[in-house]
Length: 185
Image (cartoon, rainbow, N blue to C red):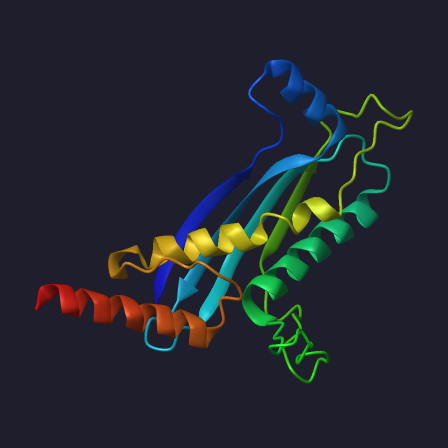
């Protein structure tokens, strides 16, 4: 198994400090990191550890918030690794039921940690709260793709599309090997 840990920062705001301050006050922001292992013989990707740190403004209900953030991360992991929406040439969805793709379970991703902070309460509402559930899903695909690329960098693998299913990862590895062998001839 090849193991890698990669962090990806989710950025909000523009280049001007005033814009960054304004955006920071009204939207959640944070950083996600993943530690993955991949078997280059089979393409099987295992998420060993996933950590998210997010500033969500004022926390109203810590338990509900924690569940929202974890649920969003698991949904992102499912979309990044397990789920594959397939359409025919006319745009008809072919994978419309759970019989056609895997749904994430707690057993698939046992080590997910979410840390929520109250650094910048929103000035736009009396509670100081910001949206929190959606922030967990957005960076997951990029974080997992970067972790996979880091782990397989010695093979020259660069993922460009999701999901990162074992057959797709195996094909990327084989394509990289074929390309390397052709270059060496």
